[in-house]
Figure 1 (cartoon, rainbow, N blue to C red):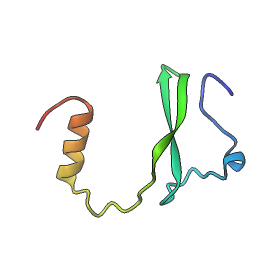
Figure 2 (cartoon, rainbow, N blue to C red; figure 1 turned 180 degrees about the horizontal axis):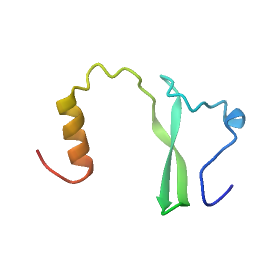
Figure 3 (cartoon, one colour; figure 1 turned 90 degrees about the horizontal axis):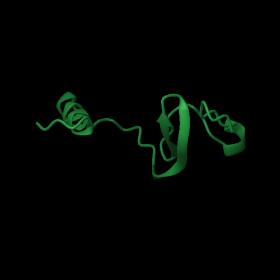
Length: 69
């Protein structure tokens, strides 16, 4: 594996770059461009965004960056 970028052979994993409901996804940790750690996520992709209003998205984003609402 190239330690500068995570670029797996998608065919080997029966994977796609298109978000697909029910598919698993990988989580990657980088230091700059260097890949430090990669592992499959415990969750799956959910493409239904009906429950995500602009206000909810803003609250999620603020929580991620450490701001409180």
